[in-house]
Length: 119
Image (cartoon, rainbow, N blue to C red):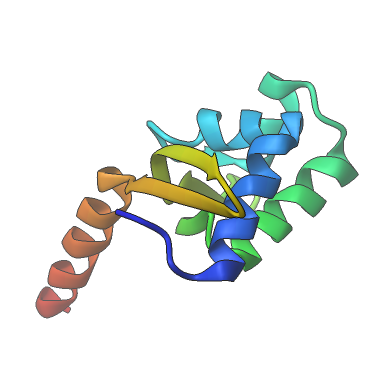
């Protein structure tokens, strides 16, 4: 689908231009990931990882799909990318961005929504 929202279009372009954000996006496409996993597996510093995760959450490129707890009761978030792929085209004075939604995100959200009926 073609992205019409200018804020989202700029967020996608910014993410693709930043090596660390692109790594986070790729790492979180297929499965839920925690901030700790991102830090360890992608070798990104703690402050940089959480700053970029927050920015991506604020701009709609990541979502918090699940909240979980450690064995000692501390709460943590599990993230997933909202887009699966993107095509960027620069022609004349315009930039066109097309993106494919990450189906895993929407399937999971639907399952969660319908599971609320049993509460």
